[in-house]
Image (cartoon, rainbow, N blue to C red; front, side, top):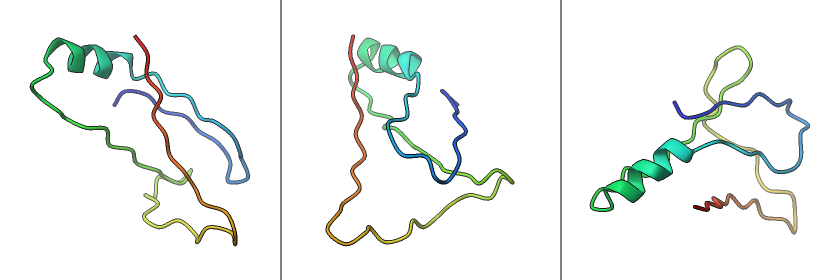
Length: 68
């Protein structure tokens, strides 16, 4: 596990995770691509497997911004 963050269900905005170790590993050995796997769990530990539909006229976007 690289990082974890708890937010409530009404949270809106950016979430920032420290993935420095993974980025340094990828930069050191660029022949492998282990990807990035993200899991979402409820406060009781139940994994969230489905998200509600996007609101009309809106679209969710997930982005990874990395720098060195």
